[in-house]
Amino acid sequence: MSDSGDGEPAPAGRTGTKPGLGPGIRIGLVVLSAVLIAVAVIGGPTTAAAWMRWTARLAAAGVLAGIGLWFTRKHYMGPRLESHQTTRIWKLPDRQVYILQRSAGKRAGARSGLTAQQVKAFTLAVVAPAEVRERITERYEPGQRTLTQRVTIESHLTIAPPGNGGTVLFPVLMPRKGELVDNLRVMDGTGADLPVLSYRQYLQLVALSLRTLLDVAHGTAIDPDKHAEAIAAEHRALKGIMYRGRARRPSSGEALRRLTDQGDQQPLLSNPAAIDMAVALADGLASHYAVVVAVPWPADGRFIVTYERLITPTLVLARARGEGVLNWFKGRARLLLDASPVDISIPLENAFTSQSYHLIVDAQEGVYLGSHSAPGLVEYCTAHARRAKRTWRNGGPQPPPPPYFRFRRRAGQRYAHFYTRFFPGPVPDLKNGDVLPEVRFRFYEVPPGSVFRAAVAAIAATILIWLVGFVASRKPDPGTDVPAFLLVFPAVAAAWLGYEAGSARRLLEGTLAARLSLVFTALASVAGSGLFMVYKSQLAYLHWPNPYHLEVLGNASLAWSVLTLVSGLNAVFAGSLYLMRSWEYVHFSASRDLFTAHKEHGG
Image (cartoon, rainbow, N blue to C red; front, side, top):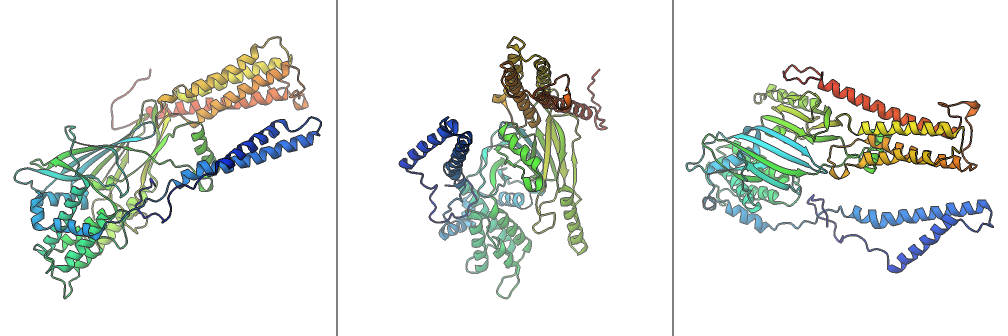
């Protein structure tokens, strides 16, 4: 089935990919393809006219290309496109919700061993995480195709611990439903592994937390006979939390929210604020699930939790419409030439869950931070600041401190650092404030790097092509085959320099410009070797002189002049790029920074 994990029911009757062709049709296609290849290569008998042979070649090549495209799309691309189907989800029966609801009763909660302090701490950490998490440091280390995320959470609970100490049931992260967490490891401040609650234990904790909030709201333990609406609202909220898929509309907390309506048949609430927390808990856990760990509860309420996991970033290819043809070409060329990406985007998913947030991307040696940006970040913070101000003017609560963020200044370092505090969370339907912004970092190679190797290969190829062309344009047969071997050398060097470290590549390594330059160098060198052999063999091809008897760097041959100019442009491009990257690295490294007194002396 699917690996999409979106949790929606799949269309009925879809069982997988379509059946392939029968063996007879496959054999027929193979025979037809062999005949078409023979016609495309031979063209026909030599007694036939030349135009007829070339027409037959073109027709056979066209039909062969059509068969190849059809076969590739049907038997290669088709099954892979159909593999991303919606996951089939079987709904949980209502009796499972009732079982969980009954387990949250007062006696069942006492038997579970959970204390009121544990339930309160868990609920607060889910509903208002910034009140518990004082500082988050999120660090990323690029691998070959994945990112290793390491998040350190420094928390402070103002809730008094139980008399016997006990443990804090702390939600370390809240992925979306259907999203798997790869290679998760959770540790305490000493580096020791922490136990993670099973899904059943997590549901029991959520049910007990919801029941506790309803009891607090009504001032007594709710009873099915006296509080039928509260029991029904709790059932609907738990059903939404246990739902295997995306959050439904209306939200799971809608029935809980209606409990605040003080009608004739509705008992008065002694603590309506508890209902608001229950609504927030139900809505949050309807679309996400919490990964909960048991942390020893210190006397002062301060503890550190660190979790580590692997993340596979989504590959985003530029589109020709909207982003330009050049960006479209660069994206595809980067894949074809195995040039790894040099920039990465990190969503600020943890920024609003703490009071202070640090984001660090720790790239490998050999690269430096070239640029950093956060599209829409200023507009996002402005929208939330204006919303808080409007709420306060209309009699609402005192607005929180305005957000603050800062980037670590670029100084030729291999890591990127973003810091923010009092960062607001997204609010639905708030213009420019409903979608979390991303922070984008772009890295370049530290000189000399692959650009320097590409420049050396391009310059060497240009010199050899010019030298051989200078001689061949005057004396087609110099009496030796050495130039043919000399011209092949830059092609071999370009291939070796470009892929010598391919087995040890990482995510932020290699540049598209260097790869393209090496490809041009190899092609120009091979073309020069072939052109020399044509001249030496005295074949009647490519012997045109330059127009108006011009000479390009002493070359009178048009073919050698064009090849020399193309190779020279490649050398100028690679050399200029190397000089610019070197100047940029020196500029960043030598920039003044008033916050540090450490210096590196270069002379």
